[in-house]
Image (tube, rainbow, N blue to C red; front, side, top):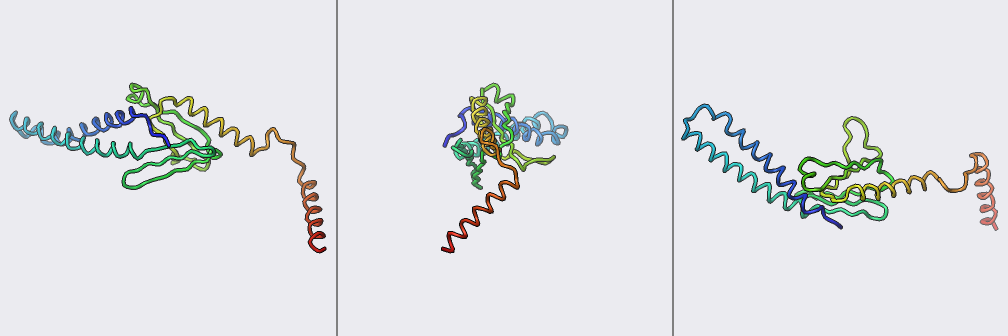
Length: 189
């Protein structure tokens, strides 16, 4: 199984740093007008300490999450394993995949990675979720194309494209009936 590119871990850390900074600043807002400059300095130091604590917790969680995230483009399906506390394994047969989305946020674009999202049959409607997500892909177009070739190949096989034309329903049923009658005769002997 493969892991996301290590640059994705950096992307997650930058995202976490931004979120931790916003959360830490919210602690300062209600107290901003109450204290003098020295009090504000103490609050700023407290906010910085909160930021550092939140970021360290995020760093450890992201490190474990990155280590646990694995994927494989197997012969007939995509396998994704992830999770720290709750382990999750996702198996997506190529035949169920409807679309592959390539998502690049601003920080991912800076680091040259993308996220692949696999939309599957049956997951539709307003509240549909993407069934499979693989972050930290350096060559997303290549992988997306490879997956879609497998999807199209499976769908062609299902629809019988390229296979001899199927017989009409009545003709096929009468052939099946005659085969069953022949088998019945053989079994009675």
